Length: 516
Image (cartoon, rainbow, N blue to C red; front, side):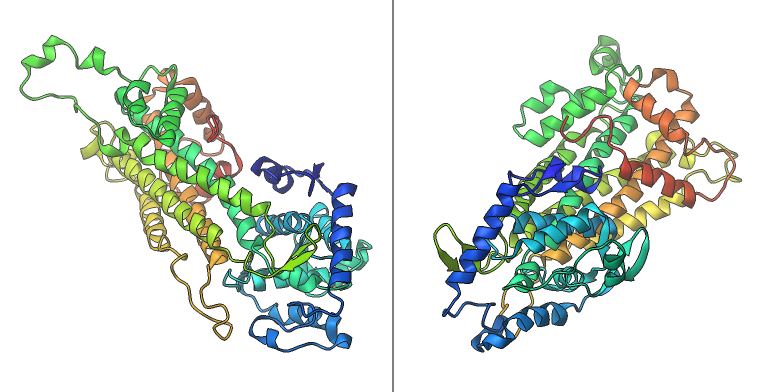
């Protein structure tokens, strides 16, 4: 069980709830703070004008709402803003959103009744996924539209996905004896006025980006290994004189992966001896192409970017990000803009740019292996069949190239794409959820590219019959993936095997991980 509201929720905690089926629990002490905060707001709001309690919303805040309509105001807010479009968020992203919203509300600064957090906990623990659409909020009064669809389910309306099928919410609630939320004071505004959609999606992006970096380091190492590259470009001595954490972490990952390899060469043994001076033209390439020898310099900034994004997203996950802030400790209500998603939006843009660069490195390494004129080691397209008759990995390269091109286009930042709306009340916005979703697409694309790279590396290993010379880490991966992607000589459709390899990479942590 993972307690919510008692301590900072880490990326590890988040992952355990989201992917490892750990249940959520709400400690009594945390619920007591929620209750205290709610009672304070009930008393404080009497005979005062407070935004979102007895006023309209946004530019409509200039209109006072009569006492008899205060509760209807909250229901109207949820229903009117349930206006999403496009594809539904996947169950994983929806659950991530719910975890993020629950954790923010459990900070006890939102003036809500405990019914809200108890109901959210039930949905998370029972794997009930509200139908939430991709397109909607602009990320500056929070993820209004996405979170409104969450609110719609909490009040027993809308639809949910349960055990793989879509049902009216009330049907599932009745079946499982779940009571819909009854509005008490300002629950509608508190539910929808936050950054939890972009934050939840962003947390998933970080989890998957860490896997991608681990796999990219692994495949970069394997590419260097099977072409018998030199070892100095990832050496401690070369990298330590450049003072970047990520570069040196990646260099350490490469050394760990390739430990015990009988294929990687020492420059001292092969080039630093007198016999080589006698030649005017060297048969061996003195320095490898950049995609092979600049791996630490390319992946290092990506490491640092992911680490920075984790810090920012975990801070947002544990923040109060709605408006106004109900402060029972200082006995006041503070109006402002904690719902603004610029922190998340900027980190997602940086992350998607970094992951696009990772996919570009993979594509260049792939091209090197497929182009016999460059590698001078493998047949064209690592074709294990008859040249001219068979095609090897030729067809899948097109998919890798076009997918990387899409990543490059998607990498235009959303952070600088503010469009005023809401009668110009929201005159500068973050587009944070858009940024997070586009980053998720770039990450998904990158798993496709790396899948094709891995398939090509395995074909190269079989062409060389070098299994006995591989490092233990790379040999273990070769054996594991060959179970789902057997060696092939004759041409056959590859799309199903590509999907199997991609699924393996998405759901498996590399032996040498991001945090090694």
